[in-house]
Image (cartoon, rainbow, N blue to C red; front, side, top):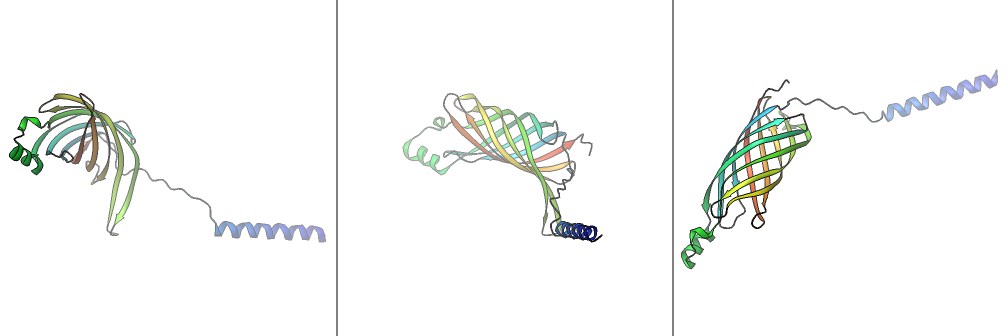
Length: 205
């Protein structure tokens, strides 16, 4: 009986030790919440700037439509915009002091494009412990055709990313940065920074 009692005591001690360790180290627990807002048919109204050219800065307006296949992938079926351009001080100096003609400067006039969006990150955080913000981060890749004032229509490849902040299931706001590499007749970078009002239709949640 003494052996049985000793074995029972060892089992009880081992169980108590295991329970203590479980309480101290409860293990890894993952809690993934569903999205509060989902996108389906997205219409965007955009205001943006073309900031990097040394001779002009473009202020543009754009309209676009995006179809969301699921939470991760979407297709901007079409977008188009017009740029109102303002000459810089450097350009004015060249025209004034060196007689450079205005037609020397090649500027983006308007553009159309289509892109794919991949949204790998979605989350929420508390702002000042008063508001909960729902947002996502997306990457952009696609193609566009830009009309320049001097060189005409030029195709390009679009690469960029952006941040979306949700107001509710119907309204969100997007901040996007995109670089369009125009490849013909020579490589040219057209960087755009934009802020969009996005209207969502057809979402079931």
